[in-house]
Amino acid sequence: MTLLRALDLVGCAVFAVSGALAAGRKRLDLLGVVVVAVATAIGGGTIRDVLLDRHPIFWIDDPAYLYVTVVAALATPALARVRRPPNDALQIADALGLALFAVSGAQIAERAGLAPAVVVLMGTITGVAGGVVRDVLSAEIPLILRRGNLYASAAIAGTAAYVVLEMLGVERRVASFLGMATVASLRLASIVWGLRLPVFHFPDDPEAPAA
Amino acid sequence: MTLLRALDLVGCAVFAVSGALAAGRKRLDLLGVVVVAVATAIGGGTIRDVLLDRHPIFWIDDPAYLYVTVVAALATPALARVRRPPNDALQIADALGLALFAVSGAQIAERAGLAPAVVVLMGTITGVAGGVVRDVLSAEIPLILRRGNLYASAAIAGTAAYVVLEMLGVERRVASFLGMATVASLRLASIVWGLRLPVFHFPDDPEAPAA
Amino acid sequence: MTLLRALDLVGCAVFAVSGALAAGRKRLDLLGVVVVAVATAIGGGTIRDVLLDRHPIFWIDDPAYLYVTVVAALATPALARVRRPPNDALQIADALGLALFAVSGAQIAERAGLAPAVVVLMGTITGVAGGVVRDVLSAEIPLILRRGNLYASAAIAGTAAYVVLEMLGVERRVASFLGMATVASLRLASIVWGLRLPVFHFPDDPEAPAA
Image (cartoon, rainbow over all chains, first blue to last red):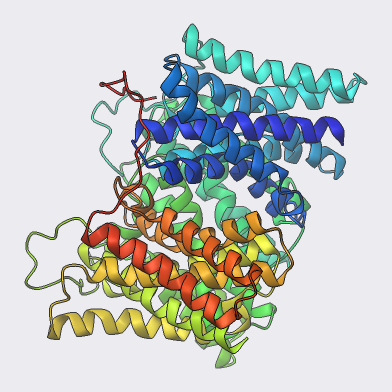
């Protein structure tokens, strides 16, 4: 339980930073920053708990998650005044949050005894949902579907790696770490080197009209 | 239970195709296609189960829904390479999924002994929610509110027809079929012949400023 | 319970009007208007009940909420034909709904014995979620994050005021009224006089590129 809790707390903090940075790009006021940051940080885990019928939801059961999130959200603009955040800060924070939440979501589903396909899907949902909420709230095209980004794909690959390694008898801590490393490195490789999967499109459809 | 399960499985498959086609228009990669297809296919039923407190949720209880969805999602780009999908393929798949899910959602609410207005609303939510999730994820204006489209309206009319026919003593299978036929034919009539309901707008408000 | 029920019914009616007015700006058909109005009216309370695991959800338990919402939604276009709604009608209805739902959500969380931070968050979610659903369905940038609007901030301030007043021993009805007055007056002050909080942005980032 300690590892899981630590993963979730760190995941909340980095997603809160990513939400606060996204809100800063939209020039929201301070409480708007906090709202977007909280929604980003707790969105994925909240959807995971609702789908798995785990009540009380993690941040209702333990408000420490909220405090961590709010402090991280408020610290972001303060630190950004002192030192300008690097250009890719939002994407790096997002990649770490994705990795942490995807594996923690998969762990929880696995402990509930669910089928491997469900474990992978639950990890993916937990990882991507917070970022989707952030992007919808800040009226951005969701990162999850920007072309040439390994995003949901990274979460699927990493949680699948975690599930397979556990099946092979690898210790949970090691499997968790390797799963997270898979998510984060695929995601960062797609940002830095443009690593991507084949794209699906209709070959004879150059105009691609709206549906 | 067999009829309901069959409806839900077919509904998942056609919504998965509709999600995969929508993702193809956005030129997502293969796993992105799968993610949008899965979200489209299981979105409506998932929201239905959460609102009705039916746990475990249908695809957690029975991962066959996930397998059907993933296979349909992967088959869509493969088949699209062989033969270009017809222009209206997305809208037709969407109309069938809407019809299947609306009636299956209404059936489940009815079996839970809920009030007729709640049955109609639950059917409508089950039918339209997957498509809304698909449209939000792929950054499209939701089909549900494109002007001149009978969409939610078709779901409301069909589930209401189902409820009324059941009250009149019509056998459930027949009432289900007629309800689904109502949804699909209203929806397709609005696509093909432009059938529509009166539009509500402010008569003296030509500029319609943003709120 | 009577006060809570009355707040929720009035909140549903004013959010239904706000949803119907938003749908009117998009020239939806009559059933589309009803769908957007219902989603706006019951969205916040539904998310509150799901997060708190309160089943059956309020409108499943008591369909009167649905009837009030549908009647208010249908009455809006009818009245709008007789008399053009004032320019700010949407924003005023939205401010009242925000105030009513924020405090009713906080009350329910408080009765469940939750921590003060959770009470404030639950009130804020209950207040803003319906409007977010409305804005996402009608493809508008969510009001919650339009610059210079006190929106979520008003809900946070009002529910925090309610929580603090209750802690200080003020009677619940009085604390509720003062909390709602805080929400509505902050929100209206930001519309009328442009009252706002300091904005967070990166000082050296004039181009603010997309993430």
